[in-house]
Length: 176
Image (cartoon, rainbow, N blue to C red; front, side, top):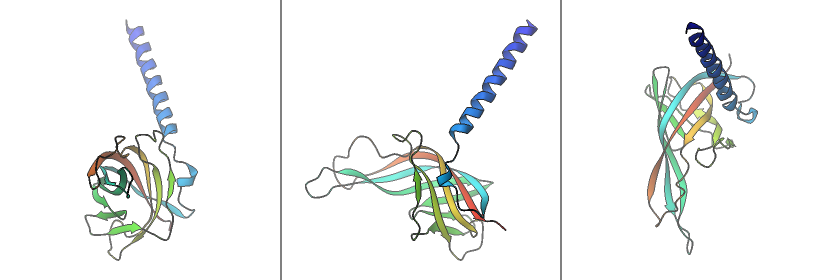
């Protein structure tokens, strides 16, 4: 009986390790989403929130969902960061970063693109407030789940919906 239990235990460990390695390989971040040389990870945070969509309609056309903004709370290292339109991120200490509109975002489709929002690399600029985000230059959004606009088209213009999503955000700062 002990031998069967030991064999079952070893098999379970092997399957767990293999599954972990596969999920890590599946979560590999594409090279196109890496910040330029000279930047290192400052911290990582998990996000839970919604992607807000508004139904819009052009003259004579059927209404469609148009992305408006994210609204999420990020938790990492005991810190809370609010994420909203801009896109912007604001820490509890008052420090804030916003997308550098002069630099294009890099986008890579999620593995389940029909349901999960894309992965991104965003160049950001910090405001003058000192704090957690004051040295962040790039934000990477990876490991997304959910957040894609509803598949069912809207029935009228002006309707807003929040589609739940989760993601991992990696914040990069200039290396010393």
